[in-house]
Length: 525
Image 1 (tube, rainbow, N blue to C red):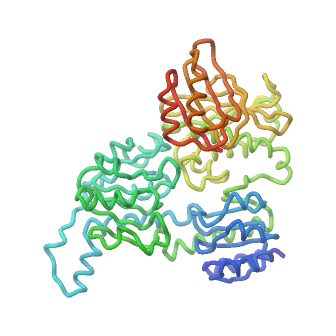
Image 2: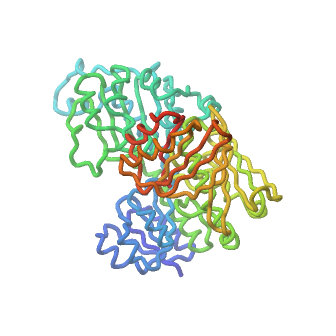
């Protein structure tokens, strides 16, 4: 009989679900790290919320652990790479608290508009400062939504119901989806310029970290009010404080902070700043939903092997797994590569299968391509929910199969259409299990994907390789391998450089400034 430990507070119904499925369950909350390590080896599953830290050390002694289920979306408290290395599936419940978080953002916006927390404190203190608290109406104001995914789209819908105008910045938001939502899709600079209120609903990625900083805040409309119920690192808190002190930003309502638990923060105690302790998902309904979902998902996996909302394991049957495993890796590399070099809204994705791979069950492979494609700008995308996200955003996804082999016995080609252009990438397997890129943007090239890479499109002119090598050498970056391809002499060329360490933004900017460089992008895998 499988055995599950619930180490954070969950609904009692979660316990009932496990028992109904024939799973033994223990509830032991508030465990210290050493206490958790002392007992975790006796469990097949671990159900958590945000308090339990599933570290590498904990996983090292979790000899029987098969699955970790997070009741909620964020898995910052789980070492996912370590879990993957030990064969532990990590699941979350990405959609269980969307409405609750969206409603909290709306509540924060209303409280900020009418100075409700300060007015409440003043009145409780026996004052009657009716003239002090002069708020603003939401009616007719423009709300700028940064990140119009699941939660952002709900916020937009509620704001439209309040008769606000809504503009949205989201590279993955298609014009058709924006029209369906009733929002206007804009670039970030236009949103900053027009919005009376700005609310953030994007994951914390390399692209979104510090998206509101001194420079971007200076480009906002004077008197703007800012709401953040997403991730603390999206805002540079020192820069926000300075903007409020200067009077450029009229106020802010924050549910999340760069460091949590936030016992101290430079924004605390400021007038016109509302702070709550990460309450976005804190409603009875949301906690019930995520608890039931995580219990059902974990029970399904432990009893039947079914995988739902896994962050580190694709949904593949036991029979198909050995055949698909090397193709899974190739598909994710192709999708991730395409996602990292895509900078405008996605419209369509076509995955072509040629040769031997066309004879297999390719639906999981297409889902893995989508997961890799969407992951750079979205949080908690996995093979299971990636197709759903694509449909919600009206990204057309199609497959084609051709069992006749072309230049390679087996080939996967990914064709990505955006608002600006269409690009292709293709890969194959060498030796039956070694993924290789063989085509990038119609340019033949043969390369292995490594953790840190530099992608360059350039004009095929003499001297370019020497200048690039010098730039990398001067920066102390060692080149592991160097791959080149071109359409024809003197025309478009592709350089794919595998390096031994991550590339800093300053170095990439210097490379972009080299003669003949059309585009340069640092990639990580």
